Image 1 (tube, rainbow, N blue to C red):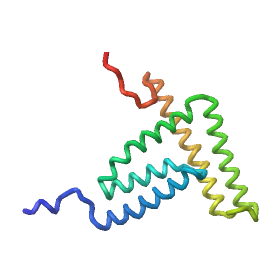
Image 2 (image 1 turned 90 degrees about the horizontal axis):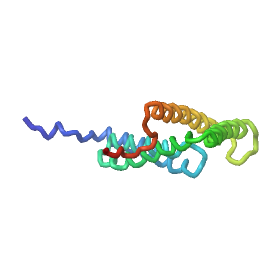
Image 3 (image 1 turned 180 degrees about the vertical axis):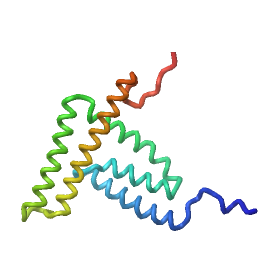
Image 4 (image 1 turned 90 degrees about the vertical axis):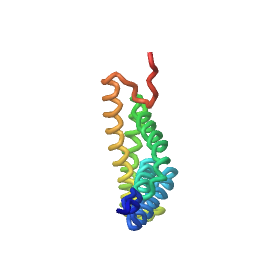
Length: 152
């Protein structure tokens, strides 16, 4: 029996789909790193999709995931940061409504408005998840940051 057919290498259709989908998410994430939106989250999503089709891309997932988790933890590290992060989400949603409704604004219309509203909602959702994660880690007695435990 030929065992070469049973390798874990994805098929052509899966590689093409993962390449196109992951590439689009990655490019959109990079753009949103400088524009208002969940850029790091989309970069991570793009890398995860790419890693499904191209196992060599997996080496890039872990560093981005660690940075995304660290940023999420930092956003809820203090009450002042939480207020600022929640305010940013509310401002994004309000700006989205304004850009959608008010005619004549640069790049105005429903695409920009929806993008800003979605970004604000994603930000607020991520804040809730981050807060719960950090709180459960503190209740368990461990530090929320990704530090290695020292041996005693």
